[in-house]
Structures are given as C-alpha cells and as structure tokens.
Length: 195
Image (cartoon, rainbow, N blue to C red):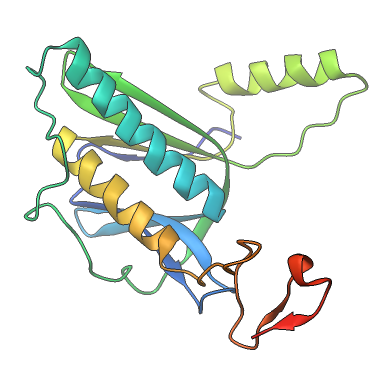
C-alpha cells in the first residue's frame, strides 16, 4: 500500500487544539487549505515538545542569518489564531513520529507528523534497523501530515500550541500534579485528598 501524504504548502490554517474537558482532552493538529481539512491526534507532551522545538529552530534560524530571515521574534497579533478547531474533527491517524526542518531556499518551516506504527523485532538492533527503513521509505511508509509554514505562521502556531497545553487543569501547589475539579490524592500529603 502506498503512503498517504497530506500536504499543505502553504496551509490557510495550521493549529493545535483540543476536544473535550480539561483532564480528558484529546489533542489534535489541524491543517486546512482549499476546502479540505486534516486532523491528526497526538499526546499533550508531543504538542508541547513540537511548540518548543519550533521556537528553538526559529531562534536558531534568526541567529544564523543575522536577523535577515523573515522570522518574527514573537508571534504577531495579526497571525494569532484563537478560533476553535474546524468541526467535525475527524482523526486521520494518531501521531507517532514528528520531524522539523527549515528550508533555507524557500524560507519555510517544514513540520512532519507520521502515523504511529508498531514494529516487531527480535532484538534492539533489528528494531532500530526497522525504524530506520520505515523513516526512509517514501513510497510505502505510514500516513504523514506535511505542512510548510512561513516564519510568522510557525511562530503563531508555537504560541497557540503552548497556550492550549497550558490551558488545562491547574497544578497542585505542593506536588505539581494536575488538580481535578474534585481534588486529587497528593503524594506530598501522604495520600490525603487535597481539594
């Protein structure tokens, strides 16, 4: 079966968002352009890591080009997108592997999110070899979302993604674990429920 690549070059919109209530949210990346929309599910930690790495990569691009790259230092208010995900949110796949790159020629950030796949191997070496083959296989690999963003779009995506991640449940002041509306069993309180 040939690989399905959902390509957005450029997207009209690329955002991170959630469906559900804090504590039970499902995180999505959603790209849209030309009347089509692609939504892929991923973990909260993946969203946070992607946003942080995008900011780091953009900062490095600015540093290496001496400030000549078309990358704003912070997300501009015009590029900020606070609208909810486009409905209906239909998951194309669950993300396993993500990759980032900067195309210096076109001055674009490339974000790739590849579907989660389970590999079977007899040893760690076999597993590493199977993973490498999977990543190199452009024709028969798992589904992939590939988005090419301007520097401004990438900064706006990273800001929104971090805002979405931080909009969850507040942390316990003692143990930093998330507080549920009904409280939680705090390990720093010897298991007493903290409200």
